[in-house]
Image (cartoon, rainbow, N blue to C red; front, side, top):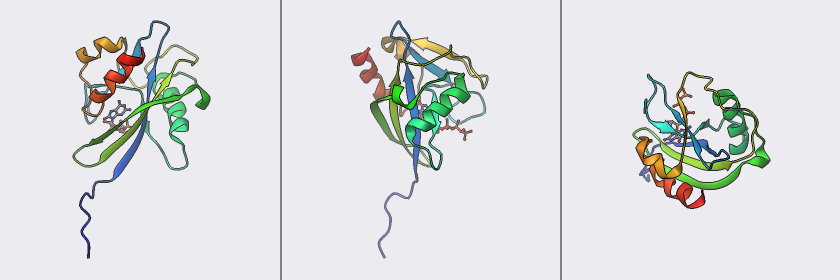
Amino acid sequence: MTEIANPKPILLVAACALVDADNRVLLSQRPEGKALAGLWEFPGGKVEQGETPEEALVRELREEIGVETKVECLAPLTFASHTYETFHLLMPLFICRRYQGIPVAQEGQALKWVKPLKMRDYPMPPADEPLIPFLIDLL
Ligand SMILES: Nc1nc2c([nH]c(=O)n2[C@@H]2O[C@H](COP(=O)(O)OP(=O)(O)OP(=O)(O)O)[C@@H](O)[C@H]2O)c(=O)[nH]1
């Protein structure tokens, strides 16, 4: 029988670089008590059964920061592929400039608009670090 070399499940998480008129990107700080607490991440979350990544993101942006957008307003930018201890994260990163509402934390998390060149000042999960150069190039 063939052994499976890497038994870690792949976790599909959709994330969004929400961009404001000054080309700043919204970062959200992971609350205490969660894995990777205190680190700054892109809004988003797990893609649930029956959802596309874009649909998951529209839902997560509404639930997490009270912002309304549409699937058509999300453009693919890049992705993260990173092995954590118990799973392998596959995380498409979308960019969104068209949305309604001012982001307000719905789950008590801190939010911050950050210029891509300043993102190194905000500790991010290891999966996110390789994504920063794409935002620097684009914005
Ligand atoms: N939303 C988001 N998740 C990220 C980023 N980078 C990164 O490694 N992740 C990881 O992807 C997973 C996202 O899951 P999530 O936000 O839906 O779930 P969670 O850990 O808050 O748990 P829960 O919603 O089940 O309570 C977490 O393990 C998180 O650490 C990122 O930039 N944004």
